[in-house]
Image 1 (cartoon, rainbow, N blue to C red):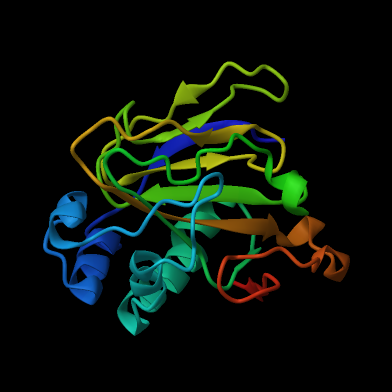
Image 2 (image 1 turned 90 degrees about the vertical axis):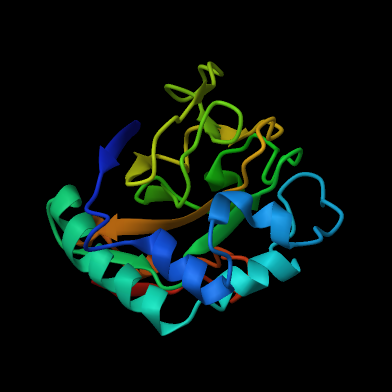
Length: 208
């Protein structure tokens, strides 16, 4: 099973940052904290119902079209076969001084399974101070930062690898979305367990 890798994608064809910036009305996502009054942070897994998260979940058809084409082309090519994918991706925002999803965890703790492959896509450059930290192999506990510029993404086994955030010690907001896919060859309707996306209850798998 895949542990993790960082891969690039074509931001000319899939300029997620531009689509999201336009949708939420923020010209520079890394400076979003300068245009908002943040709510009190919820410890642990963060507050997916916050006003900022809701603005991200309401990005509309421009982002949705990019997302579905991205899965059908870039993601399917990378996996090497057709996939089932998460209908609504999860949105994450980590403001300066905040943890976001700070609790280290394996996604199987929430009902996910090892058939899933997770794609974590930051829409801002990410550094040691504001990125996701992931162990190198299950049980190692040797957390390392996934440092990358915009235009790269982390592909990893989030069901089995412990991962989480440290407090954002930078002066930059990190905005990202993540989603899971299951290769068609191992997909089974029995995998339709109630994985929670944060806004729409049970996770819905669509065919790419």
